[in-house]
Length: 218
Ligand SMILES: Nc1ncnc2c1ncn2[C@@H]1O[C@H](COP(=O)(O)OP(=O)(O)O)[C@@H](O)[C@H]1O
Ligand SMILES: [Mg+2]
Image (cartoon, rainbow, N blue to C red; front, top):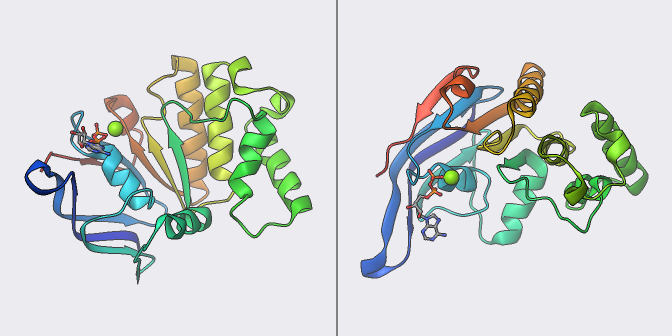
C-alpha cells in the first residue's frame, strides 16, 4: 500500500522572474515499509524532495497524500505536528545541539509528542541502549566521534517510532566502519517494517536498498 503519494507536485524557489523551478508536475509513490534510495546530481532537488515529504517546506501546487489522506499544511506548526507523528529525519551533519547532552538531544524529539514524562525517560534510555550509546548519555556532541554523533542522530529520529525515516546523505561524513554501522541500523529498522528513504551519491549504499529512484533536474 502507498504510504506516500505525490501527484503533480511543483516547487520553485524565488519569485517572479527570479523563480527557479526545482520540481515540476512531479509524481512519486513510496510504499509502506519500503527501503528506497534517491540518487541524482548535486542540485537536482533531492533535499528539496525530502523537505517536502517531511513537511519542512511546502509545495506550490499539487497533492500530497499520506496513508491515503490528503495533507494540506497551512503553516510551520502543521509541519511540526505531522513530523512528530510520522517522520524521523537524519541529515549528513547530524544537526545535534551542542549545548545538550546525548540524552537531551534524543529527549527533545519527544517534546512535540503526547508522551508522559516518565515514559519519555524510559523510551530515551531504551533507544540509547539499542544504539549502544547508553554510556555516552551525559556527554555533549563535541565530545563524540562522527559515528557516535550519527548514532545519537539516529536515536533522535527513531525514538518516536516513525512510520518513515528520511535520511539525507546519512553516511556522507562517516568513515567506513561508521557507515556500515549506520546502514546496518537502517536495514534492521527496515526489517521491522519502518519505511526508509536514503538520499545518497554512493552506488554501494543504493544497492543495499529495495529500489533506486533517480532524480533528474526539472
Ligand atoms: N531555500 C532555497 N532558496 C533558493 N534556492 C534553493 C533553496 N534550497 C535549494 N535551492 C536550490 O535548489 C536546487 C536544488 O537544491 P537541493 O534540493 O538542495 O538539491 P540536492 O539536495 O539534490 O543537491 C539547487 O540549485 C539549490 O541551489
Ligand atoms: Mg542535498
